[in-house]
Image (cartoon, rainbow, N blue to C red; front, side):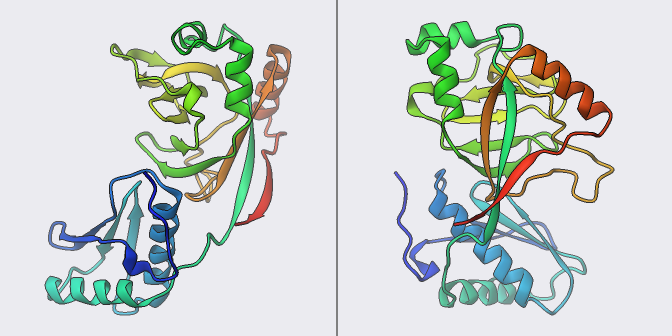
Length: 252
């Protein structure tokens, strides 16, 4: 169930919690919802633009913001009341200008290790799985558990499938997977329990770049299908830094 958002943000009942000696945790309802995401990101921007007492860092997740104070907090209860009063008084808006990123994926069975299993369990042909997976503009909700791992919402219900009961010890970098009602991409080689349906040659995380992850929470991602020859060409282009990821500005 998704909550509907009016102009005033106080429609959501938040939890404000002490998190150590120098942080405050703000929690929204524990649901995956674009309304919650908009609400949370807009309030994050509001705090960043209006807080002048000291330098702070704000870390976002699916349903929470962690406000970290560089120099600690003199009276944490007063600070919580201050932030809560801000939330109860300011007005929400739509997403600011975001980006739609187009990501190439090869759905060949050599890369889509679980395609046949998903096909059997969800009673879909592999062609239909690819069609469903590439037809959606996914919303980027959260970046974690690995640096650059994109948690994407908006997956078609026809593709919902539980995570694997026995996770793999090794999942290749670039593997595109489905876990429950979400889809995502492994930015590096790692263990993982998502159902792998394809692979992208794109580098998702560069620790040396000014922005290590190309996308931000609130952006949209759309996949498009490529064949193995195109995958090989793009892999070569990535190594020579001669490929630019396609993106367009979105006003939503």
